Length: 69
Image (cartoon, rainbow, N blue to C red; front, side):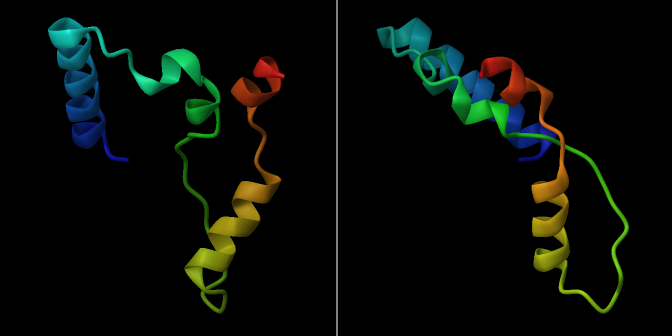
């Protein structure tokens, strides 16, 4: 999710809360956002980018997820 789309998502959540009391999904399910992270990495050009990304995500440290556990 990019910054502009995140901003729009937050606005939609705020409007829903203000309009009819709809709480954002993360209120009742905070685990939705603990796996979200940003970053970058350099991968071998011979590896498909999805495979390289998957390897990076498996090796990643997720401090928010660890704190939630």
